[in-house]
Each structure stands twice: as structure tokens, then as C-alpha cells.
Amino acid sequence: MIAGTIAGAAKILGVSAPGISRLIKYTERSINFKLFERKQNRYFPTRAAEDIFEQINAVYARVDDLQYVIGQIDRGAGGTFRIASVPSMANVMVPRALAQLRQRFPELSIDLDVIKVQEAQDYLLLNKCELAVLSYGFDHPGIEMMRMVEGSLRCIVPLEHPLAGKDVVSAAEIARYPLVGVTPEDPYGRITSEIFDRLDLPFHIAVHVRFGVTSVGLVRAGMGVAVVDPFAVARGNLPGVKVLRIREPTSFSAYVAFRADRSLSRHGELFIRLLRDEMIEEVRCGT
Image 1: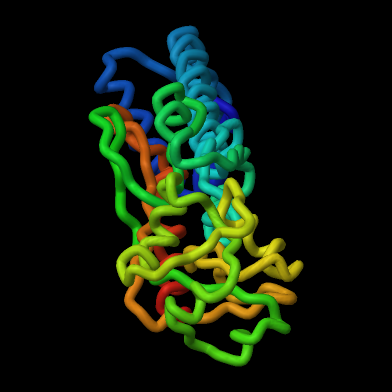
Image 2: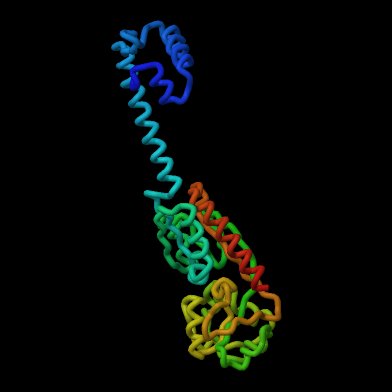
């Protein structure tokens, strides 16, 4: 139809001219009418061939449109990945996983909200986010909770603090000093203060904060010491602050929550794998 000759068609398709001739004859026999008339060594399409060609062009145009859309989806174009995270996870872990996600989907739009755990239920059920990265799990019939990894708590102190010369401290040593932290009535506060209750150690929170990660700046300013989760101080590169391991056993688990009645997007599934890998590596390096 385009080349006007058998040889021209063969050159365009990269096949032999006899193969084109045989295919035309086979096709005409199969549909029981002629597609081309031969005049002066050139092939001219019949009206039937022109009608068919018009339909085929429309099909190819739709295929091109489909391939374009598939390419857009593969690059993440036109989509938005909405995620919520508690502050300690949003500090290092979530950004590192998101950076890798962006490499895979360079045109993906990302929307990150920082929330408290108590806000996660509404965020998920009201479709404000696809998934939430949390510092503890909860039960809800409409929300699936995926436990990611378990680590141990850390103590942070100012560089000039008496404990800063140590790498490992006991709970009793920590409890001697004023604490910066979340109130024990808060779920995060219960986790970080559990070691003192378990050992029946009196402790005093001199500065109350809403988020555990906020403790870092206050500790740096000399307002006290703090017990935080390992991901709030991930990679340990905190100017003015010394990160210490705690001698007694402690436990802290990270979770990802999402709606139980909806499947995760490709972005969500990959993000969870990337985040878990980052957390596992952090726990391994921090032990």
C-alpha cells in the first residue's frame, strides 16, 4: 500500500520479494477477493484494500496510544503516590526508600504527610494516603498491619554530657538525668519509657515533646537526654549528639499499614520492599 511495488515493500519490511508475493496471494485466497491490481509492473490497491487499510491504520493508532499509556505508567507519569509517616521514620528511612522509588519511576509524583500514629486510621480510611509508616501497630478490621522489622532503642546525649564518653549505657545511668521525651500516656512514650517501668526505675521527663524525633534538637541544646527509636537516629550522623546503645534488652518495631479492602499499587509494593531493606540494613549496622 505504501511502497507501490513488491520490491519496495520487501525493503521496508526487511524480507524477500518472493515472500511478499506469496503472502499477497495467500491473503487474497483467504479473504476471497483481490487486494491489488497489477498495472505496468506496479501494484495498485483495490477499493476493498483501501477500506481495509483505513481500518488497519486506526488499529495501529490505537496500539500506539496503548503503548504510550503503558510507557507513561511504567515511568510513573500522571500518578501520585500518597504516603503518610510518623516523624521518626520520615526523618531518614522513608526519604531513602522514596529516593530509590523515584529512580524506578522518575515521573511519579510523591505526596508525603507527617502524622501521629493516632491519625493513621483516618488517613487510610478517608483515602488521604495509600499506606502509612508507623512506630507501632493497632487492630482495625478495615486496615492491614504489616510488621517490617524489629530493632532496639537508643539513648542520645549531648557531646559534652558525662555519658558521652560511653558507647553503651544502662537504664539506671540514663534515669539519673532529666529526660526529653514523649509522655508515657502516648503510645510512643510508652515504648520508650517501658524499660524504666520494667526495672522499677524512677525517671523524670523534664521536657515533653509531641514527637520523639523532636528530642534530638533539644538534647543537642543541652536540655536533657532521651530514649528514642533506632530509626529516629538512623545512620548516627547527628552533629552535637552522641548515640548510645542501651545495655538492657529493648524492643521497637516498625509497621506499614494500608487498607485491607484495596490492593497496593506497584509503587506501594516496591516502596515497602525498599523500606524494609533500608530498615534491615539500619538494624544490622546499628547492633
